[in-house]
Length: 213
Image (tube, rainbow, N blue to C red; front, top):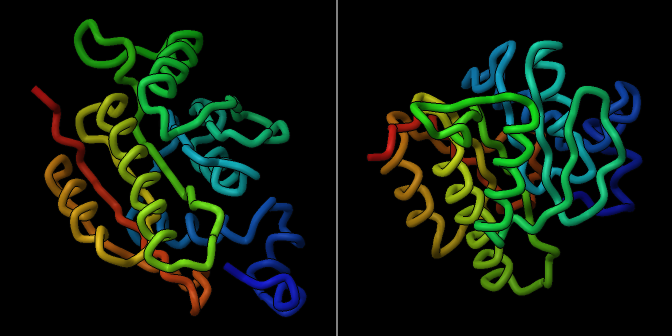
């Protein structure tokens, strides 16, 4: 996280202001996309913990007019053209999955077989807890958010779909990485240049969701 006193000198913050992105974090997703090719034109993308909407803006540009981006956060998200915004707590996986299934149905998106909920090509999460200053506690809360995002992704992704989630490095990182590896054909860890040097964040990328039996 960049301190307020540093923002005026932060090149990603300055660039975000110049290019109309709501947060400097938009450039993290841009870097991830450039390296891993997560999102295609026409995709249906779910953005978890999306406020203020920087990743949703990038995702909307990538999917184009024929794609759909659905964003969820407990905080209010100001409207973004081409993005469906929902209010929900992603740690309540059951409620969030139902909320998203309803939104997918409204948009006529259908998944495998008779399961009309499994319609997402990509699930993203840049969610992070409010920092307490206790590194171990913050890491565990980050792990809980990442684990919730993975649970939602496994419920809603199409076979072959992609997943990106942030987690802070620490004791539970390896368990989360392995959980992603279990359900995706290709799993990588990556820290974008746009991540602040002091940050403990790392992004786990899963490509090629394995159809769950």
